[in-house]
Image (cartoon, rainbow over all chains, first blue to last red; front, top):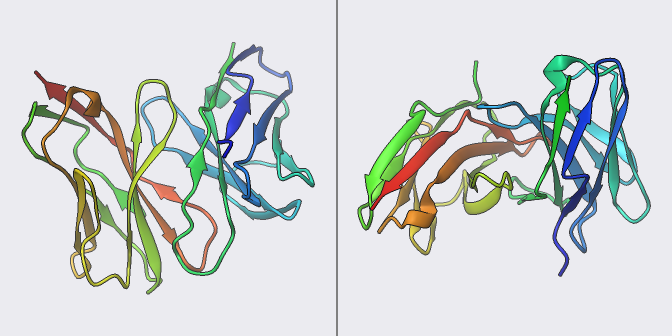
Length: 115
Length: 114
């Protein structure tokens, strides 16, 4: 069973640039969620993708966008980067089902630094 | 209001001792799940234990147990026989049945002292 992978591991960008982060979900999982974790904070939900459509969004501006592909992998795109976008970006995959139990498996994260 | 509150920014425990990490939550959804994750310095979030709102018994997974007090809306993590490798950040999280996202607390940094 292949776990969740993310690329790149680290990234340095300058303010105003655009960035694309990638995530491959765990085998058999059909749902991908993205989180932003600022230094010293807990992860904050950005959005979730299910069946290639956005399925829930946190309090993030439209310059944060995403995609999910037929193989359930996903991309997170951030336009017009700001200094406050510097964070660890975590991708989590899960198998959508009923009930509150919906364990998410996290990838190792992409650490984005905006200068 | 915060969905998940972790009031202990940092905790220290002697090796082989037990430690309790506190977590309180806020929800009006009668069906929800509570999760604990460990985050080492490498950054990856590692799932530890789950407790469902309708579960009658406290969850246990090896050295981890969850002290679930529904009326008080608390879900404290107990780590028994602490090991040096337990040193990490620990996050409490909740998912409501009516929602998609996980809500995370601000975490507790645990340091195990030899």
